[in-house]
Image (cartoon, rainbow over all chains, first blue to last red; front, side, top):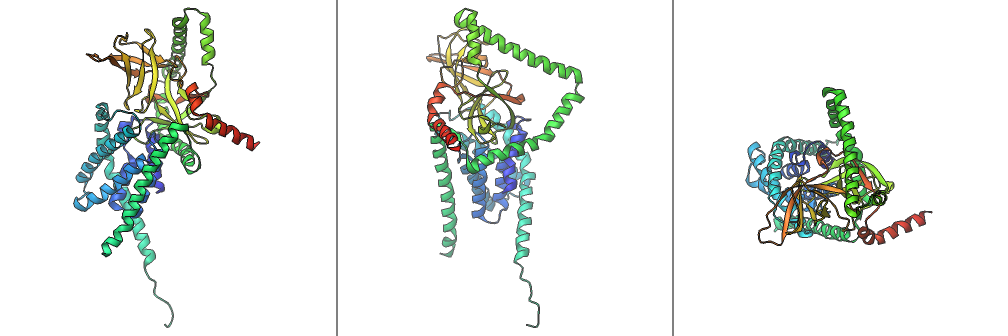
Length: 170
Length: 298
């Protein structure tokens, strides 16, 4: 959760040096990683929503907008991983590219719904293409990192559950 | 049956989370429309924590950039160039204000009055981070309510209009850039006084919309704030016209602007510590609350 909270902050700091379209959406990638590797669906959904609220606070979006989209990202990753091998590099990169487009569409539609902004804007496509490619490139290391952390936490939890034999004559 | 029972709490949790997000959006939208968002509690803490964290994360990038600028690049030429560019920006802004005064009244005495109008107390703030989402254009600055910053205050740089403060915490503020798709500023062409609305597109360009087709708008024209929106003071440079669409049979035409501010190189901004008349009306309840809270603290 704490590392996930850092993701939008890293993104925000990096954005002062690089154009936003060339910065990966680290928080979205983090949530997709949670969807693939986090053991509990309920816990993962709650963490995804909470991290979405943090992104909302650090962006110009309405509070709740990214919370909803991050919950969708978590659900999509979890459901799609049952049918597809999303742990493979190429399927994962393809999924990330598709979900970047879905995320952009969701974000644009929600903004247009709550404000008077235009629904379809061709200029956004010029932004979307490099952004989705950058996301796909960064997807593999970020999501593998989430997988590593999840398995480490899982193995620690299992060690705690191992029953110790009783000492004494019995 | 057991599977159904296992799934029910998860479905309820997800429904609850979706409902929470939707309610948050509606409430946030209403609060923005009514009185902006002065963040408090956990929300304000996130913003306050983000400033030092982002500054720390940015440090290696900054050091690398500074090293590149100061040592790898030609040292003295770089520094001199920076100084000359800063001076040029100041002179351009001064020239713009002088021309604006001359156009407005034709009398040099008017310049003094315009300068007085611009003598709003300003607070220099450092930009510490940009939007955490690629689909919005806002920035995080290291000054907040403790420094007198409030929602609805305009943000400028030495080159022109940057945006508007949208939410504040104790030591940090979030400002929506003019580039954001939710941003709209009332603007006029400095040369011909043609009026329109400058709207953000989410990219590095701006649209100058709702311009009457008979209006005289040409490539190279400078668009400045009109002051008629009651949010931004009059005469701040917004951008320069790069293309004008053919209106065809439409009553209105649209032009494309390149912003006066280079947002890619923005490091220092100035918050104008006074709201426009519209914002004053919008925020008067909140201001009364702040004044009341200050009185109770005394």
